[in-house]
Image 1 (cartoon, rainbow, N blue to C red):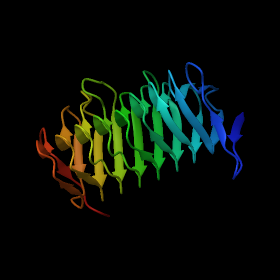
Image 2 (image 1 turned 180 degrees about the vertical axis):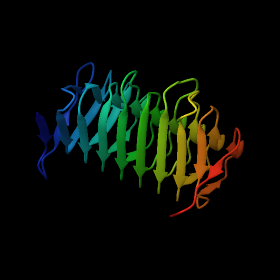
Image 3 (image 1 turned 90 degrees about the vertical axis):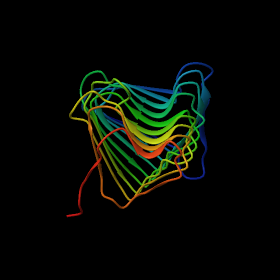
Image 4 (image 1 turned 90 degrees about the horizontal axis):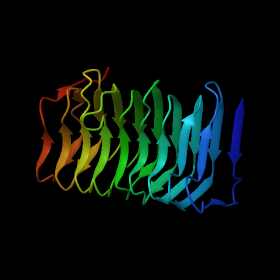
Length: 231
């Protein structure tokens, strides 16, 4: 089945939960859920928690001020986020934390700014982010495979930024050798410590056309970073 919550243009659909999560998605493995034009403002839990879904589309939403995460993806499935701002969340803007299954995520023209961390994946996932910022977060901009996580986390970044974060712009710490981070046309500048930090056993690859500068503990750190060429 398909469920759509759509705020028409000019109408502010404002959800401010007194406690817990603003929206919880518990849908079937073939169900499509679309959330469009919503403002989720403040709460003790998450903006959106996904317990199960086939595909979740989050479009043109504003998610701010949650005690945990803006989007908390706990199950396998597809996650498509576009034109959405997530800010002032105390843990993560987007958190992929599935323990089973595979998450296929697309993040396009979003702002994951001013959280504790912008984007963080732990579970088995493949994420492609385009034209998206993860700036001014208290800790990390982008993390593909948190330190010690065992999922095969793949992250492709194109025309993205991870700058002015308290710790680093882009990091990967998965112990899974199948984890891969690729970045092209990106900016990782003026972070508190590192620009790009490879901690785990996964592969890091650059197209060599990025701006990585002004990171006092190292523009790149933690081991060999490979390269890939345009085709």
